[in-house]
Amino acid sequence: MQSSTKIGLCITLLCGGVLLVSALVMARRVANYYETNPASRWHFEEQINRQFTAYDKAVTIEDIAVDPAKAALGVDAQIRVTFGDQSTVLDVHKPVVPTFRDLTVYGEHMAVLLYAPIEAGQLKMDAQGLADARWIIINRRSAAGFTPDTWGAVRVRDWVFDLVELRPDGTIARSVMQFPAKDRKTNELFVPAKREDPNSEVVMIPERSWQWGAALFAVPKSQVSRYRFRTDAVAGTDGSDGMGWTLPAAAFSCMGLLIGVGLMMSSSVKRSPQAMPTPTPT
Image (cartoon, rainbow, N blue to C red; front, side):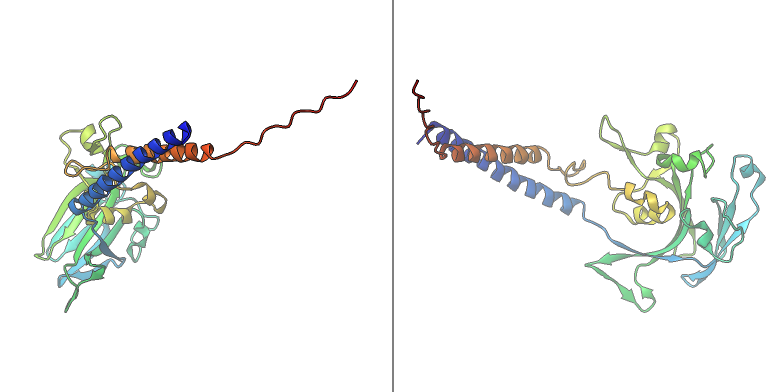
């Protein structure tokens, strides 16, 4: 056996073993990641009427005159949401046609949604329709101090979302949320508004949550693709390991296998002897 064949065989066996071990560990880590972070699926239905019924209570959404104090801060449009005997006011993007007959004028800024979980690929139904369904209103606001249609539209990372929950008990719950950003140095997720103001009440939109899916109804269609989950099976999370060392180990072992096989194949190539040139008689 030629020396190149021996070297190629050793490299192939070694890299094949590394590839096998790393692939097994990688598969175990990926399975553990998805067991710890199961994929959640949600069904959403958008409501465009200004008047509808939720949990047997009347809901009305109407345009109102902007509060002078809010106008001084740059707010140019507001709506009032009335749910039974409860109500709340939202600062919204000024519609092209105020007091329009439905909510389509607020498209890509504000949406009224009915959502329900999808289990085993199916929606659960009951006598009332969708089981465990909830009504929410999601409203996007630009960064404070920036005009919504100019710099406010460009500063995507600074967008915040008002989340209004119409609860079955007849109450209204409000919160302000924001998509997470990832620190390039530490690789940790953070809330941009919290970094600007530690006392801010803005909370992070959890990945793989109904809040995440709902917020996508209030962003421009051209921006939806940018909102990918920041954590995945490659990087992992604090509670579950990602692929880690197994990914580069598998990649380099594949390269080693190619080199080993190449060495073994090269040793089997037979070169024909070159013919000696016939001397020319003088």
